[in-house]
Image 1 (cartoon, rainbow, N blue to C red):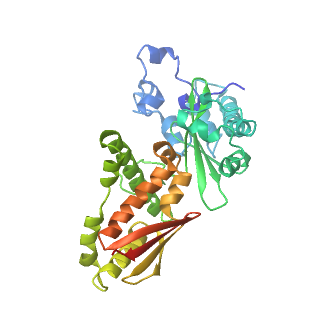
Image 2 (cartoon, rainbow, N blue to C red):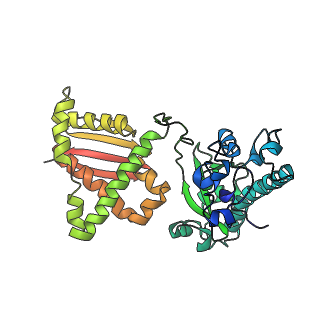
Length: 351
């Protein structure tokens, strides 16, 4: 089956690519002009283009009301418009299903190449990886949810743990390529009325998104500094214990100095950063914090970009450097133990 670039298809089912009128500058094209083309100069805009937008479809054949009585009147230049749009709708359905199915089959038989990806960094993740649990879920999924963006085909694949992974495909060089893979999708699909300021929340994701944003910036800054001033000086740059020490007595008056640091830290990590954190021991001499399902560890596992930025051991070293300095500035010595995605930080009075 020949792939059709549906992004170039107008609401009425025409393709402006190669059009003589467009080539000669007589018409910009409905897509480029948002329906305000010279063909409809008297009314100011193409009613078919606007109608398709109002119904949230790329072209009329995908509309729930297709075929409607208005089509033959509005698309009077094509007497076979119903048959034409029906064929396009059937091709669209087959093609959108085939894009993901073909990609899944290539995963299973390990035949993906760099030509199947818009970004080279995604290829190593999928190459020879069908045995990987995460990749296997993508390959074996039969209940994906499809959406079309302005320039891409979007597939939502549910995962067993309540999360999902989203695959975006873009048409380039006569084939569909994986352009992006992510677990976050912001709930903002349409901006049709300006000025616009309606932003729906993602209540179960926003804390971890904040953490990913902050940790990524921290790692990126560290990597850049390391290239300029060397590893040790770059690590020193992220020692923020003196600043944290200033915040403890200002915001936490109810406990003695070292215990206040533990209480302050637990509250900040939980309420501001969404960490599932437990105070396991609580005294001036010895305290312990348990980061249950630590975001720091979880993100390295699921966020592919972090693996490309920094080795895992160095990633942990950066984490430990930050907490050792915070502990030292509050007269503690910090040590760490790891179990799965849990981190226990032990604070013993510094002697």
